[in-house]
Image (cartoon, rainbow, N blue to C red):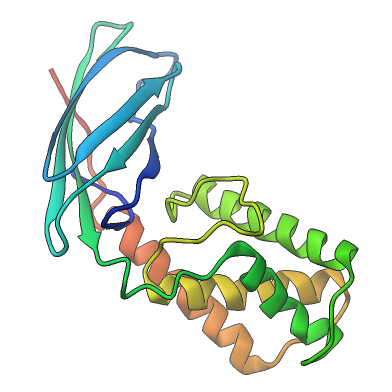
Length: 208
């Protein structure tokens, strides 16, 4: 089966991680990555996860990475990884701080300034939420932890989903109710992200 990574903005360098489907107790011994359509700036691995920094690529193209993993059990696993290249000019480029401030408006009110403590908490909850999604397989591709000034190079529909889901987290921590509309937008937005990032067909990995 193929692996689909979140789209990468042209001119930006993205960090991606991939955990091959290893047999129980098996670990990564070595690997080979052969990109076409973008460049790997650096890569590394631990016992179960490969980390890749990807740069370059032309707008509208899809970078493919032929990945071969060799394991300590003597297995050879092969995958093809796909990364769409999108225009960074089309993205709204929201920062983590802007998203945190947006979610806090439901608590402090429109036009009001959140305290530094409230802002720090909202930023922490944003990082926690994206880390939770990543653990579920819906990795948005942003580098965690996010600082307030960092931009999120993700598709526009991801931004809306992130904002609405963070509103729910912030409201829950402050014991506030949210509107049914916000709840529905958050749920459908997260579903869209999972549909875009999780494999549509789950099968066995090809071993040799």
